[in-house]
Length: 99
Image (cartoon, rainbow, N blue to C red; front, side, top):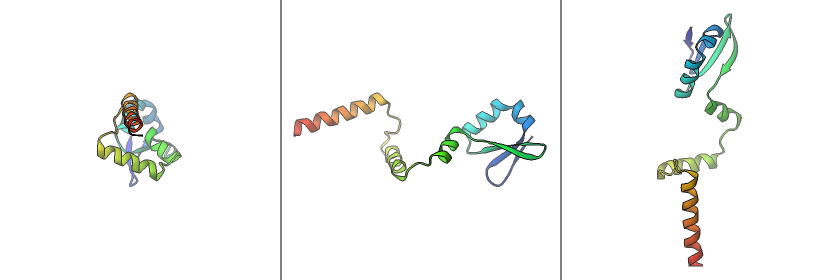
């Protein structure tokens, strides 16, 4: 049994959570909801996506958020480590030739 409340949480019974755990995990991964698991009508636990947990456990410093926003604007947010290393090497090479 699923039930939503006003805070973007979905309330599920412990039995439903146990029977449908894989579906619930996929739902967390794709949405911005948390799950409140209750037993006999009493809330017992909350299930969060790992992204939401990290945000709660270690909020992103403002400077990192700004860097991320700038990276998204420039289209560089999906660079691999190898691509980042190439860019750094190229900049260092240009800088050493100038100085």
